Every structure is written in C-alpha cells, then in structure tokens.
Length: 275
Ligand code: HPA
Image 1: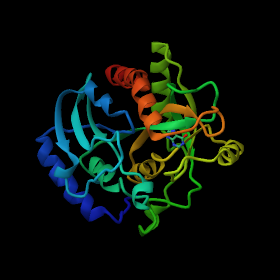
Image 2: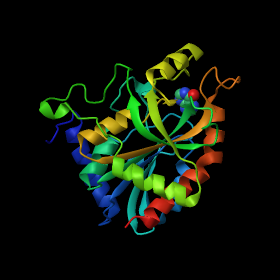
Image 3: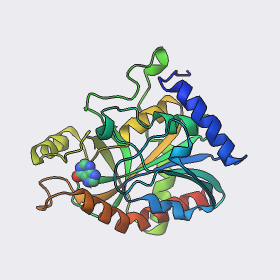
Image 4: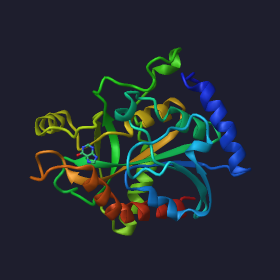
C-alpha cells in the first residue's frame, strides 16, 4: 500500500535535486549517521558529497557532531548513500523532521536503510564503547511522524520493523569479526534533557535495553515507505543512575567517536560480504 506523507511534495522536489547531484549514481543502501558517527562516511570510496543546504527540504542542523552532508559512493560492491547528521524532535518539536531526507532516499531507489545513533545502555554488559543492534523499539513519547497523513496506508505494521534477515546477516558478520553485538530494545525519549534515574527504572520494567533521542521516527517513516531497516547504537554511557556519573553531550560525542571504529568494521564487512 502506498502512503501519502504530508511531506510528499517536498520529497519529490528533494529527490529530483538529489538525483541531479548524483548524476546517474543509484544507491541501494541508505544510512543515517548519528552523533559523533560522521566519520563512518570515510569508508566510502569515490565519494560524491552534497551539503544538506543544496537540497530543498533537507534540515538545517543545530547539534554539535552533525555535519549536514550527504556522502554517496561505494563500500565494497555496495552502492551507499549516507546522511551525516539528523534533526531531532527535541530541536523543533516535530517528529517528522527526517521525513524529507528518508523519503527522498526512498524515492531515488534505496531499498535498505541503516540507522545509527549514540545511546545510553541499561545493560551492564554493553557499556560505553559497545556497539549494539536494535531488535525492536518502544515509543511512548506520544509522538509519531505519520500523524497528519491520511488513508489506510498510515496504519503501518511495525512487527519485524528491524528486518530479521538483515539482523541475521549483521549478527553473522559480527561473529566472524569477533565483535560482540548485543541485540535489544531501544526506547525513544524526546529529550533534550537526559532521563532521570526513575525514568530509567521505569524503562527497564517496560523492557528497554537502550535509550536515546532519535531513530524511532526515522524507522517509522522508513517502514511506511517499505524500506528494510537495520539500526545500531553506539553506547556512550550507562543510563542515568547506573554509572554513578553525570551525563553530558560532550561525553556522548567523545565516547561515540572512540567507539565508531567497531561500528565501521561491522558495516564495511557487511557491505563487502553481502552478495
Ligand atoms: N539517554 C538518551 N540519549 C542518549 C544517552 C542517554 O543516556 N546517551 C547518548 N544519547
């Protein structure tokens, strides 16, 4: 079922401009690079670089650690297009801030979207520096990027939103590389304040393994558009009240950059192995 997003007209315009800038290059994998993870784009060979502000409808970013560039090219045999940085719901109050970028990637033909973020962990065994893969998410924020869309296509099935086949492949790649890759449930908090220790205790009861301020709205849009999704968190801290230390954005960025190598390893190995 096709869905009409509120941003459909803007997506069409953005996709046309993006197509023009890519000059005949047709990516199959899209990727969103989160806080401190922009350097993952260094894995791309013969990159085509397009600043977000060259594409109408792409967001203006206000958060440190987000570069606001599109990087397209190859990793191994795969054709990829990466978005270096996202807009978060806490910047604007809107959950659909990434609808145009995700929609434009879908419109130019990607079939898979890999989403990355920095997150807090509720699992002691996946502490700062660990890479984890999302198996599911919890969204009790009261926000959804599809609010305001019309038609039955808005009732998007979220079972297996994190594609089981992609997850199995990534899990196999991680095992082959000897990189531990815990899978778990990501709970979206709008932020921008970090969670309280009481909220983290509540999140644990509800089944959360990781907490963060992004990803979920992008995944919902991607599923609405029929993309296959995989998502990874770079754990920058144990969640509030667990680590005994206070949380800060500077710490998030420093830890994310330090752990990005393992994530880059997994992603590049996947792209190189994937037949
Ligand atoms: N909570 C929410 N978002 C985050 C965290 C956290 O503990 N760490 C990095 N991003």
